[in-house]
Length: 104
Length: 179
Image (cartoon, rainbow over all chains, first blue to last red; front, side, top):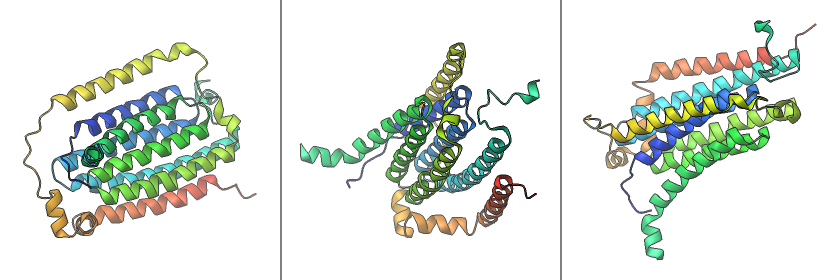
């Protein structure tokens, strides 16, 4: 593969757009499982920003951060899906529209 | 023509990865079927892993594919299948009046981000780890591991602790209550 001077703007803009898409998804979708997927999308956007700036500034701290973020995201996904299964067992729904007990 | 493609291959790949990750990201929120949305998310992760690899972050790219696209998304699809798709499917708000406000706000936020990205000029002295320097020291994974097990040893142990707690917590949350 030929060496090439990477321009960082496309990756940073992609990261910003991915983060915003995740935000739209969280506020629009109604099932908790889709909201969790949108959280993962936002985390990916942040990871992309960290790695890109790490490459731009020739520093490895960003990549280490991303490693820790991925680990925490895995823990978050496991606990979130466990909560979801327990919620479904008790309420037979995973839609936030039906989960309005605290409003009543 | 072939010469041109060979010389420009990394750039072409880079732009392709960027465009496709945004397209599949839109797929995650606009596909009604949750299984399609999950597969779209897997493709986002793979494209982002490609961008990581092009930025010489090989370890992170591998972890992205193994942990995100592999483990986490398999868990998601498993739960979607477990809960039966119909329950997950009634997903969008019935009143479409809710639609414009979050979309407008998020587009505005993306606009602010992009404006900031294009107009910021960091006057930072660059760190010592240029691509050539990392190659001299033995490659991305060697240098990362040297950092991780010396300077970041305590966070590393803390993260291991967190994972153990999360595993126990997930089991406790998801298991049936014993009568």
